[in-house]
Image (tube, rainbow, N blue to C red; front, side, top):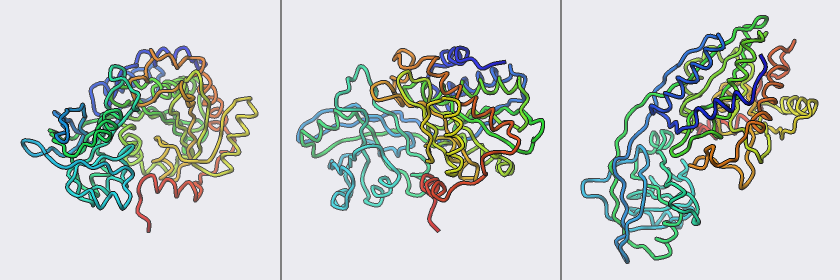
Length: 421
């Protein structure tokens, strides 16, 4: 059996719906992938794991002086709730949280630029703010065509630094409240935290000659709120499904594991859960190949590699030998490759990034109606993945050393917020 971009794109179309971590829609997608993998006649199962999540029942923000106006906001999942009757406090725009800003934050509703990063969260908590306010989108967004992002206080924030009241609003509204000189605000948040179930879909094909050497293929299948995630990352999910079909029909010499990860968008939770559950076998994993984003009509292919310069040279040479345009470099990539590299397993990411103005991610525009994906472009990454897989799966001597460079290891440690020893 050969791979088929058309078959892959048809499966992508079938699964073009929102699949947020821990929801019934994510579970529905996992069961569909499970059924498709089972058609290949390989051992396949769902491995559930627990995710910490939350629900916001109410979020409200009103500027109370020097003017009165209510603005649309969303509460962060796992935010603290305000006390009954809400919270009234001074507003302060802390921009990039320089020391000058931080000395003015205590007891105030503080707005910052950009996303709420862990380092900024730590600063805000230590500054004893009353609440945190962020914004998303652009000042040119039309409300009818965009959404006010729903974000989450992840465990990497709350575990070391505690919980906070946190809200998100639109960039245009954030600009207005600064421009109009907002002084005080009233906010209300009714939030609840709970555990939910997510799941990884796992398939295995035993190797005929080197069964103790394992190559792992991965892609995440969940999406963010408001997004059907056809680009990020049902495109990668259907590509590794095609690789599964191929190797189910062409017996590999090494053992192959195919994993479709849940809850990647919430902090790589699926791949973290999988590597933790399978830690004893990871010493036998010689390579992880991860596919995350593909099919953009206007774009460029790239292969960030978490290994060594020798591995980069090997992959780059293969791409050139086969006439495949791909920018190969040694670097980390914010995807399910990270937990594998953390355990010493070299990882290769295959991606096709949409170019500016023709690539949409993490919002409602990541859908088929946006018209920026097509099956021919998906086939570019599919063929690169197949070519690379065929070379390494049946190599007489495995061509990539099981080594992570010091440079990459340092970046992985920083990504995972590991404390320096």
